[in-house]
Length: 375
Image (cartoon, rainbow, N blue to C red; front, side):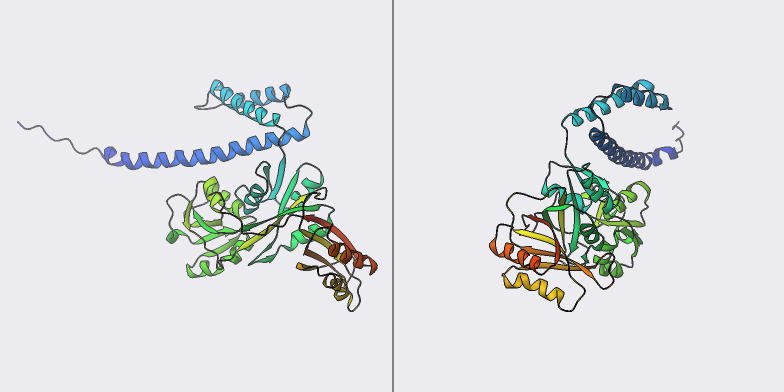
């Protein structure tokens, strides 16, 4: 007698799909844990600037007691204790190196962080919410250096940075030019057809306006490109994308749905490096802040000092002068160093005219296109 066949178990058909789903959730959780762990150690490194010694036994025991008490569910006190002891030991090891910090605006994965890494890979990059925080951190000595964008070949000048350069006493000690290759990022498994809206910095959205229009994607301004990628990892959906760097895609575990989505091929951002002291090494570029009198021909006369002494201007930007209606302050970049006779004569001529100016710095210019960034 033939055995009676058993009906198929629906759980067997569902098992492969459920297994794949659970593994995807594990991968997603791992990505988030790594980013949060990196953030936790970065905070610990920053405390090294604010305490007299690397080791603080009282604080460490306080942390250990708190996390053990928070152990719940599948997390035993012993497991949590071992995990956090490893985290504290690694933080202490890195603190002992007395690292130097570089502040940048945005989240990790921002173009500013990539520029900072290119200028000095030994600096620990510290993310700041605003440009003001970068300037304030450098001025207070919390950051050894800061880096900020001053102009983009498509979007133009970053006026907030220009105003801060005028208002503060910080110096420019270097510049970095970074080619911008904007990418459309999505959650793992998403496709270009899934995307209905994107988040990114307003400048990036302007740079990609044609691409978004062709694909019927709406733009949602966000404070930072990499910040939009981070938001997408933690809180986004498959219908939402982010425009950010390839580095942001790697950091936040996102898929690159479209490469190089900017409307113009020659998209480049120039960054300047901030410090409290002037650069004293070799230099071939200078920057000054200049304020002219409110009279006809005053600016032309001031600029004539450079022309008369054959000093080539590479950039001039005007901003309203504080406290003076009709008066303007100018940010001027030019070729040359303070030891150059023509530069010295031009600056001397400005002084003879009674023009008020402040040297932002003389520093090495970045003459060539930046190499491809790590992705």
